[in-house]
Figure 1 (cartoon, helix red, strand yellow):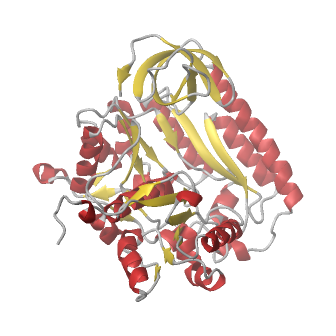
Figure 2 (cartoon, helix red, strand yellow):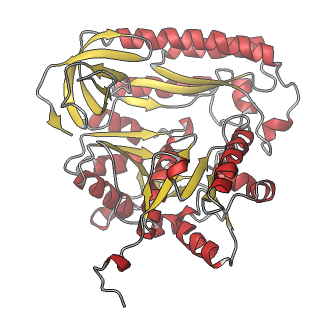
Figure 3 (tube, one colour):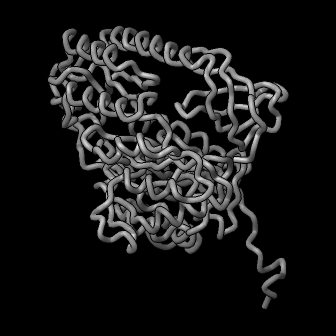
Length: 461
């Protein structure tokens, strides 16, 4: 028998390459897959050619996601042939959840298919693969089981880290596949969240980003010492995390207007560490279209939320998402969207043409809008949103803001980071800045980024 410290007892290092598509939750899931596979000897590599296992962590939100995935799988199939079949290929994420059987049928080179609530079972699946026994398709919804099974410690790289607090969605917007691929809304317990946040802070993380498909739908029982306070919402959770030593900035994404409670809005007023940034998708400015989307809010209701948020935190930056060309959208409906954009004044926004997602109610709706009309409307909307982003960035010139630097720039001595308002910031002559928080005076602005100079000594984040 090999000694516990002998080379024979140390797992052979195997290359792991994970390609991540889509949202921040997928980025978090990819990080946790890496943690799950580490005890098996898997270590990240820079390319599929260096890997023993390749995982495609897929997203089903955008158009043609499935075909893009199969195109990538075709390249991996050829690579697998070059390795004599030694390369293992796994498909994870929302496309895996929605089309697992089709993936296994259409691309035999795939060894494993695992949904977003079942990737904690990857080690077991790899063992089955080695034994050539058992099912290689895992798409059960078991969010509580997943989080209980994940390693308690994480490897983090940089001063900012995602922390999933909520999964799934009960809203059933008529255009969206998330309820079908991520399952019902599930909130993690306070103790588990705080333990993970504390571990991140211990590793030097200074910014924690709370994640969920509807993150502000999070709710849970408070810790035992605060049991008389009643059920907590996201605002109470943020207040608790803000008390942890080392946590200098807290953000959360993505929110739904229906779940913007008074307590969460007041948290923006009261908690210094909570970034003055609110990503609150509205999708459209027409009440008729919002009803067809099953969004459960009105344009006026959305504007009232923004007004309350700005009363609580006057410098708050507002970001949003928009869909143009939803089935039945008229010129008047689109003008209502433009009117809402002008009324709010967004710092950032993501806008897309509507594209049908198979299996969603909107895919079968009548009065689908012509692509040329969608193109023209999207161009008009993006011009307005770009002008607003430029105006917001211009207003930062001359101000001093705390910038969290996360990496080096292309030029010697340049550092890149982002402001509390999620603006990209670059600073020259700052070789020591990465992985630090520093005060920066903003000197210039484009639509997409800011230029600044350090005005205080750089301190580790």
